[in-house]
Length: 474
Image (cartoon, rainbow, N blue to C red; front, side, top):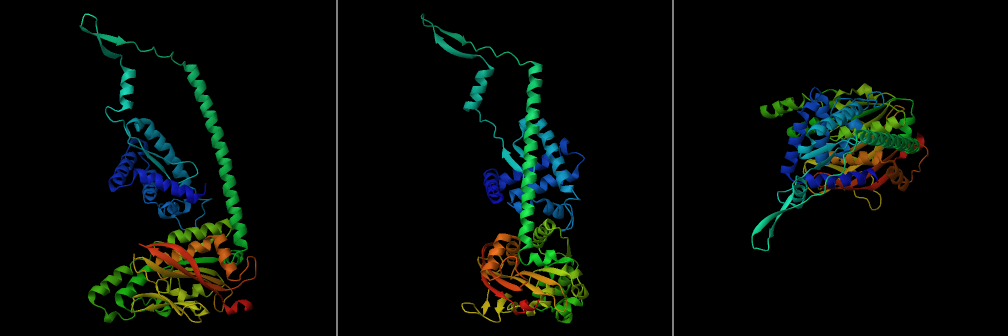
């Protein structure tokens, strides 16, 4: 069964026991009791781990239940950290499994819920133990086994007497030697199953990484970025800058951003707006979707023996970009002004439209059946269409390459990243554009269209593809 089908099956199972807010509250209360119990005493980290994976599973966020994502979001590791050298997630998961066994070994008979963490997975299994209802067949059967059954019998003289029906004597007790032998057999069987499972898991992982290494080595843009002798850097977006531009109604140019001039005309702001902008500037965080994107790209890089450095946009200086390093930039120009530094090579360019209060995509050189501009219809959490861009361009006056992944909203950026990390799908999309796998370097741009329903991107399709004219020279 594929991972997607497994996740779907687990979602269905979780929905059965966590279908209402009351059910979710009961599960969370159960987790609280488990974490505060004797089995988890003295291990705050394991307790936090259990709470995190259960909360993510209930919410259906199975993409967050990967080793690297857990390491980043729960333990504060960098998105590019080496999971082979740093085993904090695996070690904690193993400890949680042991503590869960201890807890349910003591309280399992009176516990309403059961939680387990299967080997080789960070997605918990949760099920509910429903006690038999009074008067149910189960309870009546148990009563009949535990007590002699009496029934009323009428004597020929008309009097009612009590007659006791005898219950068969219990089978002879199993000897201690028999129990020990059975335990040894079960232990040996469990060891054999575990060994087979580990061998199979390692085989699956080995084949998975070997396949991703082969696919990436022949698929643009990764064939260029991973095979380059130069460093690879990923720059996350700066959502606070996007908010500041919305509050101030002022556009921040890449020149202003490079010079840390985040509020070009502060004298035109009211005291309230000015104070709000200063509060936003205290942080230096990435968009919520950027962490899973960085993790996915870092995993792909690691599978191809390439390290990747991750930096927030506001910590980058212009000289950092004026090198032969290769870059991956997340976000549109409004949330990551550094992408403007490379957008003059594109036909599809983000432009802020004041009338609609959003970024649209303008097509400078429309081809047959292409539009001159693409305007998203899904604002906020509305239902409609949105757009994103995937582009591989050169770094001007340098030898490095730049991969741009940007959407008119965060969901668009997420959709662009999912396309480029889905290697078979990316290969097919580039093939339709006339870029064969394993070929020479060609710069390109893809325009993506995605449907939005209450903030979730669906049906992501390549709307248009252009091979950029400078490709032949590089």
